[in-house]
Image 1: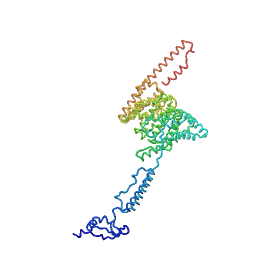
Image 2: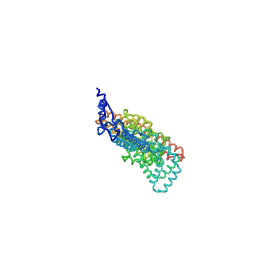
Image 3: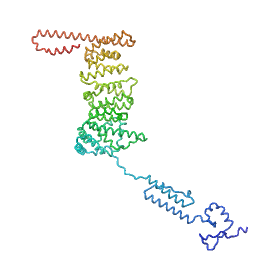
Image 4: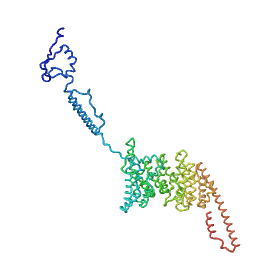
Length: 590
């Protein structure tokens, strides 16, 4: 026990290199020193001196220097980052003391590399912010266009490119292209507007944005350009619009947002120039559309809103041209596959509803029913109108009622013309050929209307009786309906017939065919039809015969009175014998 309590001199050698003790030795309790060393053997082993003479302190000046050096290096890097206007200091990760290894030199190298890498990444991500350009609306850009400046420009262009109207029109388009160059696609979302808005809303886009003086200056200048040059600019403008349409459709497929991409050309200017050309020279579209109909590039449901907008522009210049374009190029769509699409039917109807709803539309359209030798509504269009207005009861849709409203005026335009003229006689023959078929389709409403038009044809051309005789047997049901209509409305219809003599001859031929059919091998159903036909033929023949007797009696009475008057009155000069002769000749057909 005494040995434990005694003092002993430490047997460890003195470190003469690092610490000079001047000959002094450290006095310790040996037993206590051994216990302390056992407890810290693992942790202190890494800090033992190379010669095993002792233990270094917990923290030495060497480590503090390294830590200080690393901290200063970090501060310098942070200062550099702050000078480069990088506010987000958290992007540069700092190593924690827990992850710090035993080798401080490695830690400094790794820390420096991490900082440099992160700074490089920040430099790559950081972009210089550009100043945002102010958004310019269509109205703001249009307000800056000066009519006098435009007039001076057009005068200069006309002189510089005299005889080159194609180039003149392109320069004209360039002028408005520069005027609306600051208008972005987002300020003029024409595709969305055309798809989602009624035609009444898009009809004046974008012409409504420019001043009256600018519009007048433009259209007056356009009026002196040739149809050939104007046709070229119309096709060029349409190509530009459809190219923008294709790019927008492609962008909407590749992006969920379907945003409208920026265009290199000013779409506002293209639409504006095209609108002014069509309004001032609507006939240009009549010459262009047939060419477009032959090219698949301009066909398709997605192009229909653009074509509709173009027709609306032509309507502003000439309402009759608008109806012509609708009947010849838009209405036929209903006879194709896309005609069953409700959106297509709606757009087709919106166009014609705007046309017939215009002020004084009836007088304008009826008086111009035949324009430059062509009918606004040709016979084939009337046939299609009949079927969309009078469908079978099971095929009626919402659009049917809208067609029923506009049909009377369209029918009037289709049948308008100079009665007895060569062109009108030809039209009557064409219309008769399809109305007789429509009357026999088994649709009561359609048959009634088709029969009325069939009888109208008889009043326009005596040759229609001959054509009726040829198709009588093949269209016996429609023929019976026409005979019934004539018999029931004879008092009103007899005076409208083109030739009662031709009617009488046709009835005789019908009776012979009826007798032949009834004497042959026909089924019970057709026997009943032929019996009805023969009944109406006899009734009409009897009325024609009684009419002839009355006319003959009247002629005889007039002749007797004339002779008596001549005997009684010696002054025969008072009688207008020429008029009396004409009167007799005009009634020879009876």
